[in-house]
Length: 73
Image 1 (cartoon, one colour):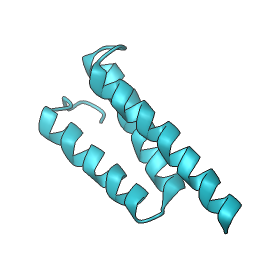
Image 2 (tube, helix red, strand yellow):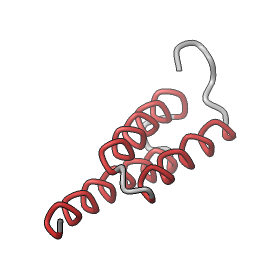
Image 3 (spheres, helix red, strand yellow):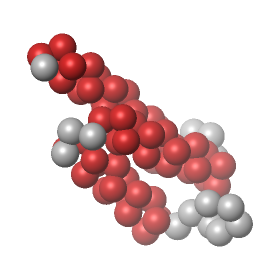
């Protein structure tokens, strides 16, 4: 996201991509996507934007699911 604004549509698209990776069991990729999205939202919309917090919750959730998956696998 170099010099373009981060629109609501772009946030939704990227959140969907991260959620799909999570649903497909690609937890590292999901965590990376959520993390980058959260950082980009903070850059363009402020540190405490609720969407950034949602994205960082996605990071934590993907890490937890990945750890649980490794423990059972």
